[in-house]
Length: 142
Image 1 (cartoon, rainbow, N blue to C red):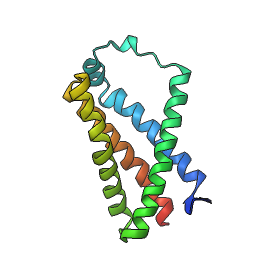
Image 2 (image 1 turned 30 degrees about the vertical axis):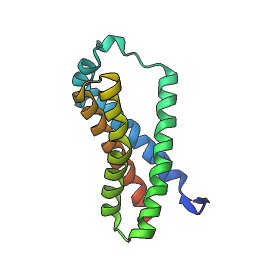
Image 3 (image 1 turned 90 degrees about the vertical axis):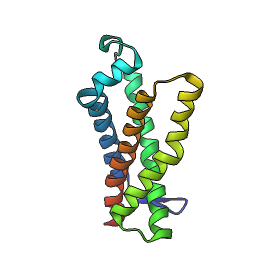
Image 4 (image 1 turned 60 degrees about the horizontal axis):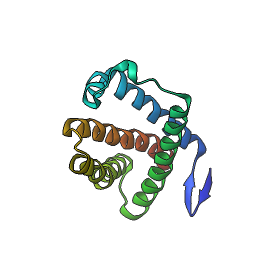
């Protein structure tokens, strides 16, 4: 464990949160909602071939999410006194609602995206912050 700007960071916690995020994404856009997602983006499954660079980008994004959630959970714990589960639920809900919904909402307005696709993607974002938060929170509170 080490500190970055006064925030404790556990490399093990970050790594496990990244792995959990990647597994969630593979399940969400695979067996859970993959058929609906492919249909909503207007492509065929065969068109969506993952390249090695796609995986690298996904790992970098998952790492950024884990680092951000780690800081948010530490801050919320220190200023709010919330317990582990409350902190994870409030933090994940707040990030997904305050930051992700406006971005995805703009995609509906300005890019004409399908609201069903936006809902599917928002659900994944909320689940991502929730899963990452559960992993990271366990390290923060224990």
